[in-house]
Length: 481
Image (cartoon, rainbow, N blue to C red; front, side):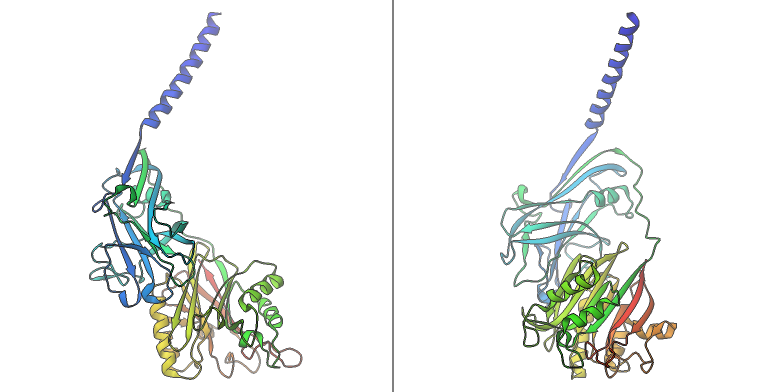
C-alpha cells in the first residue's frame, strides 16, 4: 500500500513539474509592440513616372498603375534590431495597418507585403533611389519574397493584419545579414482601375491606435533559422508568342479562333503572349480574351489564367493577352505612346519570380517604335528580375529598334542560332514570323535564374497551305533554376 502511494505521489510530482515548466516557458515569452515614429518605425511612399525622383516621407499609399505617375508603393521599416535581443526565438510577428481612406472603385484591393532586401532612407528614398546617391537595383524598390497578402477595403478605420512571422524571425536571427531591421513594401497586386488608391495612417498619427503596429512575441534564444536552400532543380518554361491576326483570322480570310487556339495549344506552352486579340469589336463581337482562355482549357485540360489590355486602355478593342498555366502574383498595364500598350504578369516558377510582358509596337513608324521601346524598357526596370518581354515589334532584326532592345535584352531566337539550338523549317531558315522576323521573345541581361535551351518558329500551314494567322508562332524554351 505504501508502494502504491509512493508511485502516485511520484506521478503527481512529475505532473506538477511539467505544469511548472509550462508556466515557466509561458512566463519567458515577451511581447514588443512597435508603433512609435522614428526611430521605432520609419516610412515613405514611392511614386513612379514624373514623380520618380520625388521623396514622399509623410504618406503611406498604394495604387496600381493606370499611368506610371499614379503607381505607388508604401515602405515601412521596423526597428527589430534594437528592440529584440539578437538570437531571440520569435514565435509571432503581426503587422496591423489602419485604412485612412481610398477609392471605392473596387471594394477590396489585394495588397501584398514584400520583403525589401536593401536599406533605404526615410527622407531620401524615391522610386529611383533608395538613398540620395544610391539607386535601387530595381526601380520601385528591391523586392524580395512576398511574405503575406490581404484584401484591403477602402473604408476609413478598417484594420488589416499581415503575418510577418517568417521574415521577422529571419531578420532577428541575423539570417538576412548584419542589419536586423524588418523592411516591408506594400504593393497593390490587382489590375488597374480608374482609381485603386489605398491610404493608410502613418506612424506620425497622434492617435496611437491608428498607427502601423508590429507586434512581436519572442522568448529565449534559438539557433538562427537557416534560410531555405536555393533551388537545386531546374524547371522548364515554354514561352509562346504569336500575333493572332485580329483574333484568329487565317490566311484564307476566315475568322476562326477555335482553329487558332487548337494549334497554339499543340505547342504545349506554359505562358503565352498573343497580339491583336479582339474584345467586342467588328472582328470579334465577343469577349476574345475569355474565349481564348476557355479554349486553351478545352484543348489542354488545364486551367489558364489570363490578363488582357487594349492598345488604348479602353475596356473594348484590340490588344495584348497573356495566358499562363501559373497563377499571377501581380499584373500591371503600361500604356505607351501612339495608342500602344504593354501588359505584365508576375508568376512564380521553381521559387523564382518571372515578370512576363506582352506588347505590340507601332506598325509604320521607326521613330514611334523607338519612343515606345524607350517607354517599355524604362517601365520594365521597375519590375523584378527575371524579365521576359514578348510580342510583335514590327521591326526587322537589323533595325535600330532591335539594336536598342538588345542593349538590355537578349533576342532568344538569335541567341539560339548562335548556340545551334534554333529550329525552323525548310524554306525558312531565318525563322521569319511574317515577311521577316518581327515577332520576338526577349529575356533581360539580368535574368540570372533563366537559361535559354532552344527557340523554334513553326510551320503552321495545313494541307491546303492555309495558316490560322498571317503570322507564324515562335516558342522559346528556358530552364528556371
